[in-house]
Length: 96
Image (cartoon, rainbow, N blue to C red; front, side, top):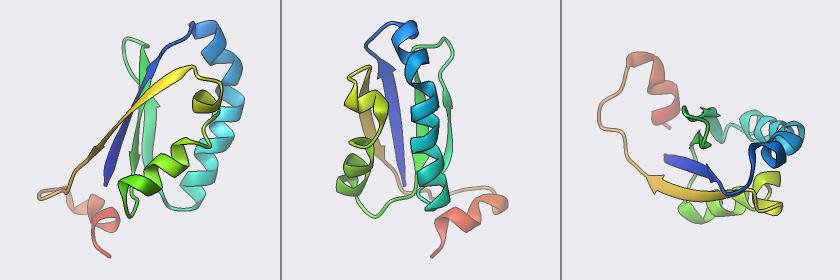
């Protein structure tokens, strides 16, 4: 499992312009089962995506599709983690 932390490197005006394309990107990966949750940071300096992927390389390949990446409006930090405790309702995302 991975936490993808986006930090905006451009004005919110530039980010807002790309939101519709970014949402298409997000929806594609929700439908594939790769994304579990996403949302913006508060204060609004970027966003977070929780992804269920096989490897960091797979996450990097997914990021390359993001309009925020393509148009260089966000930087990305990827953190891999292995959940050891989780709520029962989250089990679906943990166990194969």
